[in-house]
Image (cartoon, rainbow, N blue to C red; front, side, top):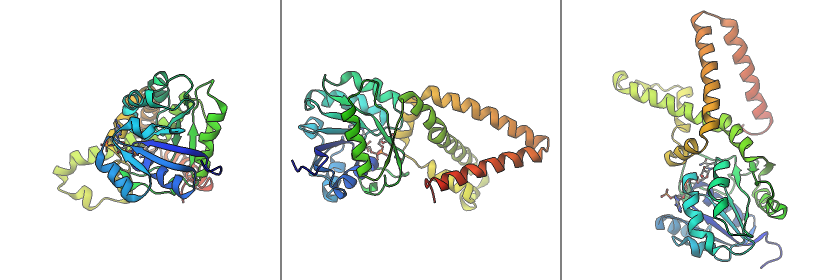
Length: 296
Ligand code: NAP
């Protein structure tokens, strides 16, 4: 192994948007001597090899993780347990298993108990993505300047956590360490609820589409267009997010419904000042996000 590489072999299970972006970024930044890929789909493996972002790819997950120092699960959250069952017996002693899933208590629950003694679990979540899926959607700069949240369960080997953090830093990310349940609550409001709202609005518009005879699409103003981009996100991934972060999403949804009812009342009773106050407050949040360089 080259002494300058962070890992000798990294295995990526699932070579979609996130998996292929990691593969490209690892290659570009020289973070591992070799990258191997395991995916349920042979055509995705073939595409990864064609794109040149890995050294080996195939549907045999046991082969993909053989001798790997780090295995990163990049599959929908609902597939983590099935993947862990397939790879557990083939992991190298002392290997690190990480993931990129958008919900963190679920991976600790589903994957943790299946790993052999001496294998370290360091769950992670890059706060970066697009609405596109599959190996061709990935690119090396996806994680540049974005946060990656690591949620090691208490008692996790500190060196293993430090190595996973170094990988993400090497791909351009900033690191935050969080408790898994806190992560799930924060992401419920910053990501999961906004997706639920987008799916709802676009769904409502699509139900109206027939009676409005195409006008929703023809005259879609930027507000609706922005929602359609979010609502174009991968259906399987988002099904799994809501099923696996049920409590936190329902809690945020309850608060949102109460605030929506208050707005409904303000509109009904012509309380312009209440509307103006809220819209002024929310504008400041947008400025804060731009100042934090999390959007342009
Ligand atoms: P994706 O583009 O759909 O890629 C997932 C890949 O895993 C696909 O090739 C998929 O094949 C494969 N796969 C599914 N089940 C599998 C199994 N049982 N064994 C092996 N491979 C399997 O998804 P993604 O957007 O990269 O998302 C992957 C993970 O990243 C999710 O857990 C998600 O929560 C997380 N994440 C996503 C984003 C985002 O913006 N997309 C951001 C942050 C984190 P099929 O195409 O046949 O399903």
